[in-house]
Length: 446
Image (cartoon, rainbow, N blue to C red; front, side, top):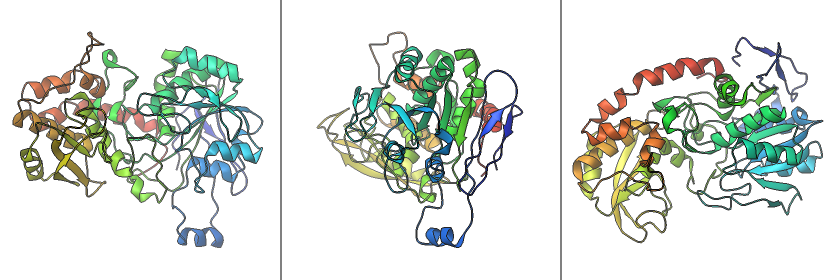
């Protein structure tokens, strides 16, 4: 069932594939949720038995209604290769060929619309050869630039359809927030075609604090937010937009996922995994990333330049002792294998690194941020060479780990000799407060 705050009113729909639009009573901005009801029939049951994914994405449900939620609007689509239907075709290609949607522009985030760019890069602005649509480069765009792009394209409705990885420092959610701010400025509707959070619905980790906001954490949410992008859009709209954009969205519509619960990881959905970025190759990567992504803030390789980024962690100075110590902890849902690898790019290029590979044995019990805290503490204890990444280009905030974790606290604690228990305990109260605050914006039970 869908949860609505007191400003929201559900409006019904007709037909098994009809879209139910939700609107807000009262003046000012609106926050809404659209759900596409599903009918149970022998045909659909047979299709499920034949291997159809038990989870239906928001995109799939909108397509089943022949994109009725978007008809009569000039639509701008923010998406990448993850914005697909179960036939593995992109929503842009399907919308365009259906002739039911007037797409006036596609907006490519980091890595680009077709996904050809590496980390920290984009595809630029171009004409898409398949559809003839203009693809605007939206990576790194601030609100002013995004507003300019929307006005240039003549956007009336913004559609967001990207598979998130569930971590605060995964940049697509901040592209979405920037687009939401721009949508307020131009008076556009905002539609999220929702997708599951691949790590499940549990919130974990430290809170971002205002002095440390950046492109890898623009607003105050916890490190593993445990929300879908649709839920995050509702949270951003209710908690941040009025202060940052002067108003809430005129119309926020979330086309919900059907069949997903907060207990589910991506492996439970039956959906095909498409890499949301070059270094997020599998659902297993997404499970570890909210924790091992922190190793970007150290002098250890986070596995970039290997075929298992964020699962392989190590450095030339690491030996077998790290794996032995971590294995002895018996952390739930994960095993640590002694591993050696040679990165082909990023840190320690062409150098043999000793380290570990994380093998997630139970994604429902595994806590990636707790595991990473144990890994950091063990590396500190075992190796004098362990250090934090220092960015000379930002002398006021030179430690990348602080931007990733939201403050200096984790770095200060580990440097001072804290245990992993002490590190994790430090964010318990702020995590509890976030869990209470987010409750009104959640759409899925677990």
